[in-house]
Length: 146
Image (cartoon, rainbow, N blue to C red; front, side, top):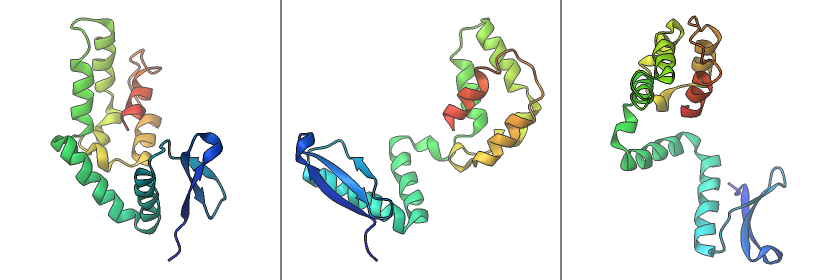
């Protein structure tokens, strides 16, 4: 199978390495002048195109190496962590605690963060039931966690 991405060094840009997408013709800076590093990144991009499912497994291995709990952390864990970081008896904490009681969140609370699909969050956001006064900040924060 032919590689989708090829590597070139743009001397007019200070020797920064770029990838060129054979399908679209688009160019993407790798942000490095190191040829070895650039080849590694190109290899990773080409591999991701060939074997997306395998790369998801590899990503989980890398993430687990840096944070062993990432494989089991649920939305409930994340929500409780956000609340715990808010000052006691503050309006911000009250809004988050009210937000956490939203019945729309129930279907996603037990889902592991890494296994969440976008459609699950869309559904929860579309049926929210609690008016906590923080819709302008809670849902965007949930999306940022995702």
